[in-house]
Length: 133
Ligand SMILES: [Zn+2]
Image (tube, rainbow, N blue to C red; front, side):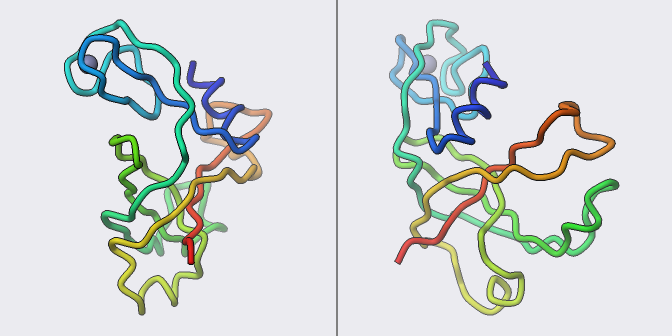
């Protein structure tokens, strides 16, 4: 399910799981509903749009990713409810200067070089957010 999530993300589709018991949407996909813990989940296509709730500029990246710093990591609330983490498609200086909380974004994916510590040695898909308007 997790591999499928990234495959779809690479093609511009964001997939979540809708709970048949409580109706909540879980994203990224897990075995159980984020809201009630139910396992009766069905795959749904999400809009990929949401709002920035918080973000931080990372200057010191984890081992293996040093070349990519600085980058901005954002927490986004999707239209369908779940909160997801990804990188912001914005240079770190602008991210530091502006207040981006509440801005509308859409999610897409970038294929990045795989790293020593990354589980998938063939490819690495990173979720990115683009600020709209
Ligand atoms: Zn549920």
